[in-house]
Structure formats: structure tokens, C-alpha cells
Length: 104
Image (tube, rainbow, N blue to C red; front, side, top):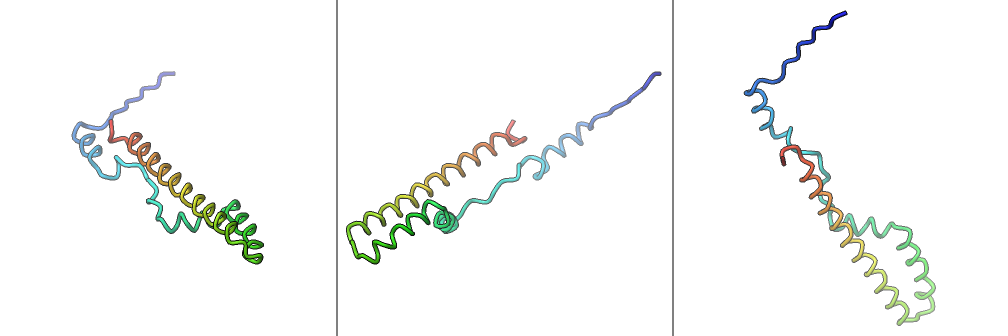
């Protein structure tokens, strides 16, 4: 039993035109995260919600020093989350760029 397979590739002109097509050289990426979107996502995190629940008795009692300390913790959590998200986005963009077929 003999199988005769004839495979032909693209002609040089076809290969050149397909490699310059804008959709063939880029990978799908995520859109950049917006500042407010990250802040609202942080507000919905369980740790942040726990901090908010723990702050309620301080609001009722009226201990100003502890409320200020807890507010600083709120801001610190949001700041750390924003920095981490921006770093992750930059890393993903770099990896997306490095793995793009048009790069090499």
C-alpha cells in the first residue's frame, strides 16, 4: 500500500502578504484596567469588607485615634492593590509582546 502525499506550502508572495496582515501578528490582550475599576474591586474584597465591619464599633464608640489608624489601613490596602495591579498589567503586556509572532 503506497500513499503518495503531495503537500505544497505557500508561495513566497502568499507568505509575505500573510505575514504583514495586521491581525496575524498580534495576540489578543486585555484592555488596561481603569483606576476606579480597581478601587471598586478592592472595596469588594473580603479582607477590606472585614476591615469595614471591624470599624463599625469604633464609629459608634467614637474612638478617633483608632478610627484614624483603621482609615490609614484602608488607604494602605487600596494603595498596595493598585500598585500590584499595575505591575501585573505591565508584566502581562510585556509577556504578550514577547510571545507575539511578529516579534521574532
